[in-house]
Amino acid sequence: MLRNFSISLVMSFLLVQPALQGQGVIDKGYIKIEVVDVKTEDSQMAAMADMFKNSFTEVYFLPQKSLTKLSMMGGMTTTTILADEKSENNLYLLSFMGQKIKLDLTKEELAKMQAGENKASDVKIKYFKDQKRTILGYSCHKAEMVVNSTQEVAMTLWVTEQIKSNAQVAQGMEANMLKGFPLAYELSVQGQFTMVMEATKLEKDFDKTVFNVNTKGYKTMTFDEFMESMGGMMGGMK
Image (cartoon, rainbow, N blue to C red):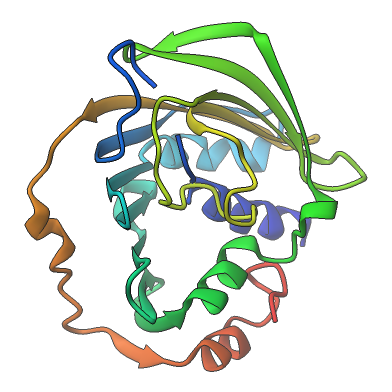
């Protein structure tokens, strides 16, 4: 049961949030974040480690609009989130286990989907601005996040304040919970595995037609229908 929860958690955290280069803050662009390493001492989890390595997140963002695309395990599971601050609804597409689901979510429903069971009070974040790294030319400082009081799940992040975006890249956190955009992070589930993700590509411009998302073949569901169908698999969100 715990192992199934961990896999769902990985899917959640692969999905990320807001963010500098020497020339100043950027508020539009394209970022690709890839799984660069997975470590585990659990023999059963080890069999899945190489599959997790074939996972990545792509983020396309403008000042008030963003598209987040997650590909897990070589495309076995994909998630697409199109968020528009000017729109009443946000598009959420999920493809997994032969199912294709389309959701038109309100801002409140999208925030609930992304935060899951975690509330601000459940997440503790510490920033270490004296510890720095440069990733793709951007200055980052260290942050540490513990997801729950048992400290079974923790993240070490390298965040930059030079990238400003409302795109959601890390599910499990409420909007704007993290101060900065994480260009690298390490997710650890105590006693099971550690996964390392890092930005491998960053461009300041992109083809805006990427926002014309193809929804053909997807079954439309309401937020409540989706939550009921998923049951407790995605953390028991309601």
